[in-house]
Amino acid sequence: MSADVLAGLDWATTTHAVCIVDVTGRVLERFEVNHDRDGLAELLRRLARFGTRVRIAIERPSGVVVDALVEAGHQVFPIHPNAVKASRPRYRSHGAKSDASDAYLLADLLRTDGHRWTPLQPQSDSIGALRALVRARDDLVTARIALANQLRTTLEAFWPGAARIFAAVDSPIAMAFLRRYPTPAKATRLSETQLRRFLRAQHDSGRRAAAQLLARLRAAALGRASVLTSAAMADVVLAMVAVLEPLVAQLAALTRRIEAFVQSLPDGQIVMSFPRAGRVCAAQILAEMGDVRERYPNDDRLAAEAGVVPLTYESGKRRCVGFRWACNHRLRRAITTLADNSRHANLWARGIYSAARQRGCDHPHAIRILARAWLRVLWRAWFDHKPYDPQLHLGAIKVANQGG
Image 1 (cartoon, rainbow, N blue to C red):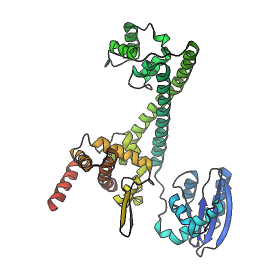
Image 2: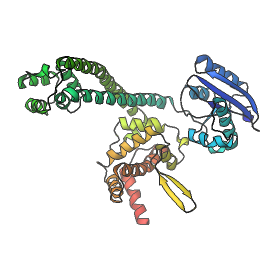
Image 3: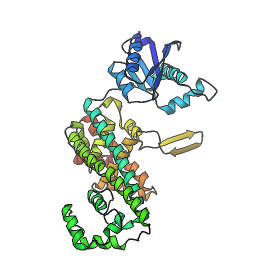
């Protein structure tokens, strides 16, 4: 019976609207379920009445609901929200939107245009674990940067020297310095000997001499905050440091966990074999690519998912090329990071980047062009389960140039 019915699920934070139709578009059932354990159990129970492999359209490719549906054996078809938005005029002339109507729209789109989409293939447990670690780290890095910027802005307002004595205000040594000297008054009598003793206690590398750091501290503009304001600002600084220190420590621990994990995966070794891929960047790429080869049958599909190819708009004599906004933004950040790093270690990559700049492309555009070129190679290595071989790569380029 599952082959004769289709379902649309409009995902929401608290409740999900579901619509089930037959192959003619006739509504068989509508219902809502809560986004909790009982609600998901109710969803699976009611879908089971129509078969064990129901085709279900939904606007998101991941999440608890999607995982539950896939594990239950149903076919889940993720449809991009832009496609749903563009299809609404087919069903109603007004601009109103409701969860129930969107659930029907999704089910009917799957009925009429199902050949345009492919069912979601579940990733391996290893990729699921890696993705959870990498995405959590990325979000924590964003939080760390925001808090570090806030701390730097606070210091610039009443004690600029403390923001500039060390390269990064969120480095362990900078935060230790702020804990000891949260105001200019606390550091008034700081001597070169005391600073040298502090650096030694913090296991500083000694790249910058104590005299240089002290000169940098003294050369900064003097804050003019009053006594009470300075004391209040010191409380603010100490509060931010108290939040930043464990965050930085946990980020370091999470990074080590990711680096060890990606090295243990065969696909991780493949991505890490590329020039300057590193371990964290390789983990970010692999976490978004996954290990289901059928999802990307060619490199064009992967490049579109990564957002490193433009969109072409063509109508009559009018043709324009625009930036691709709808993509996997995490994958784009990771693959462009790889491309940017690679041009410093690979002559071929440096040549593609330089040629793009000479044609008038700005840096981000040139990096996307290089990322697209690397994706062709990366996709082939990933698809064939083989690490990057620079000799094979350069040999193929030479043959192609001779043939041209």
